Image (tube, rainbow, N blue to C red):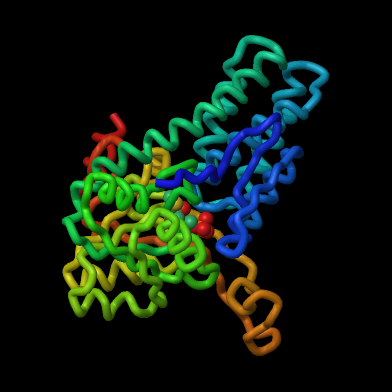
Length: 345
Ligand code: MRU
């Protein structure tokens, strides 16, 4: 497989593959100011829950190098402000909060001075990159067993190498299945309104030589009805402790359709995507994005002038529509409250 370098730390800067330029152009952007990393997350130069978490971690490490505190306390105060800027960039993907909280805890617990805190945060942040790839590979190994040979798989949005540091979550399961010799055909929902399925999933699978067909989001029901899809597999932005799962808008509809047609619906996500503080999906904050994502194709407005638009970026699939949640520690099935807690232990 052609490993993609989605997020990295290069010569004191955060380097991102510019996902807004794909598939037309494969270009990397270097960020030398932490505030620009916050913006890159907001405007989706980088996107996908684990990739956002890894980028925020590197961004906080950059902030730690740049903040000059008068004292250790002043430094931590300013670092905390930077941490809050990252947390405000995208509210649904919990990996961002998980990564920032993990680093801030390490910073506060460090008994050394500013220099030592800087070193600890940078060390931890760069280590998180490798951890993410390892976790995705473990998830892939567990999930690959669920896919039959010659499986036809529907996926939604992009939960691939681009959405992580490497390998992917939902696409990582597919990649791992292909690596052990299974033949898989992927149907990629185009994923309105930002088209991550058409622009990103199709691009990265094609690059790896994994057969992929793009379908309009509203085609999936027909494939499921006609027995042309064997399962659905998606990623997640945040999973409540009972298994309710927030993922890209349209995931819930796809889960309803799969359930109706008796087709397995799988979620692949690392344990860092599970928010054990939330009892159920109603507590997951859902990001709402700019109306122009819906109304415009490039610079062209396709909608009546000034028409109201509602553009939530995510929806919540209730746990009862989910066949299994694939994590790096194993596969959880209903009742998820117990099975997810057991994997965490
Ligand atoms: O708005 P995006 O592109 O960041 O949304 C991404 C998704 O919904 C993914 O499915 C999810 O983050 C899982 S990625 C491994």
